[in-house]
Length: 367
Image (cartoon, rainbow, N blue to C red):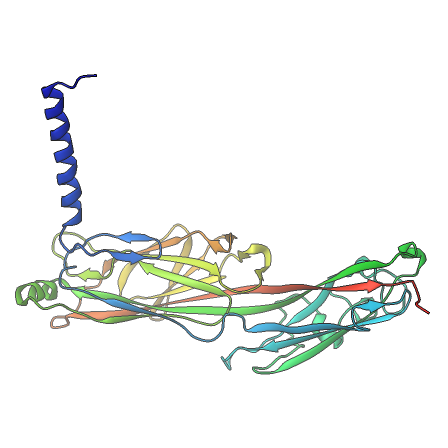
């Protein structure tokens, strides 16, 4: 097929226009883009002279409570209708003295094993279980739900608690006189409160003009500190900073929050409870008005305290992002070039670790 000169000209023009658009998109003012947890942040006024950096750090540990080891006596093998002991060691690896562990340990699936007296199969009992119902010893370590204010099974920082279960194997008839391998499935549940501190930078509009006139950049390091615990709170400001005293428009701060499971276990129910499972503290000196479809906000002391209205559900170990908009940003006092404001967030949840031990029931006695 032949191409006419007019068609060639049209192709050249189109290619040229595409090239111009591509180049212009790469050389916009302040061409460096800020990487965000939730995407790319584009250019805003003053980005050529205001260059904040952010130091992301984590304190404490991701898994405050851990299962150190699990073993059985006899080791991994038992004769029919005889006693089996299951031992677990649970340790508190946290380093925050204000948070002590109160684990709840239970065998939720014991397969063919019965209670210590051989009366009923363990799986016929409901949680929490007593010692005579395939429950743990000390009994306090299996009582109640994870969020139990009685705090009976106390596990202080650095401490290790040994918990044991006494079960009884099935009779030969109940396993048809066949060598049987059975799994004992257990879980360790606990309640926890995690947190995050995140700084927001507010820069005076006049300060940006002065910096542009002098040709000197404003650099400052902002904190993003995540506390201990498996559920982490990620926070991101929609722009690298907020402008105060901008003459043409009303400045707003778009703050995005997202939760994720960074631990080795599971969030109970795969959700954070509604009406206060997540609390966000935004200083009133940042802005006078708070908007969010997902949070109920009210003034408490020096902060706007925002609580989630509904359950925050997790999918593939993370929640969807939530946005809070702070408008009517308070103008900085005369002579104040910039100011940082600390956003705090707290999350309350129940968490659990799961595992299993395999035991062989052997009805054949070797001679």
